[in-house]
Image (cartoon, rainbow, N blue to C red; front, side, top):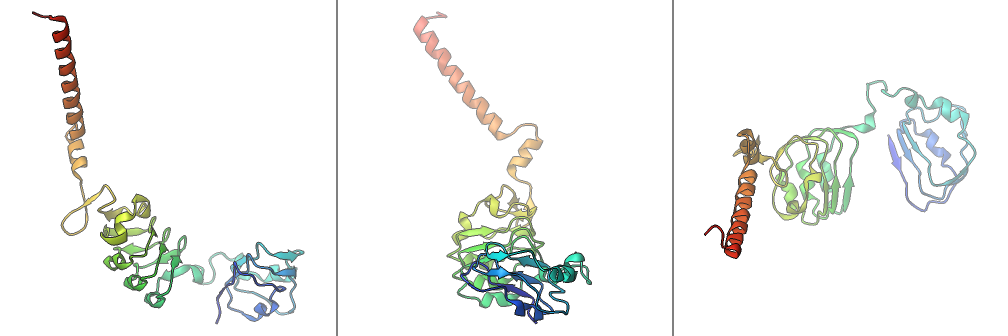
Length: 244
């Protein structure tokens, strides 16, 4: 039962594929950035696209308005929560089987409601060059196995609920704070929050010395200013001969 159909960003040249009306479980239909043309007309008397929630027809050459029959039968769009309280295509965990897509170059699952943990199987995608799992509901630790992704040049895990020590080594040494922001439970480089022996966040030296009323930076600054002032006074005494 087909639920998602995305053929966007191709060079498909055709009229609107009316046969899609016969897919009663279709929830997402993306036809954007192609060469579709003509009128979008319904050819059926029976209800069409009753479960459709996402429809993207942008950047084509369609003519005229959407058929009234389609609009009247977009029942799922009229009920934002659906029968079970949430859109089916927007929830759930990232399946472990994704690790079998060994030729995958990029993976973007951002801005959804994905739950669970980052699957260990992602470490098998050794050809992966960019990974974006940001703005989801992912929890748990970042798998150390992801360090084996030596081709990875872009990583975005921000705005989730990840915890523990950030893996170190390989490409992970090149990612900045932006890759992890919005995960209050993460610690370790490149974040300023250090980890204790078991990989949980702990107070840093900087936080501790600030609690004492002043930090080591203040001490260094005062010492430096004192040295400069002393050298200046010595120079003036040498030039003027005062005080004798």
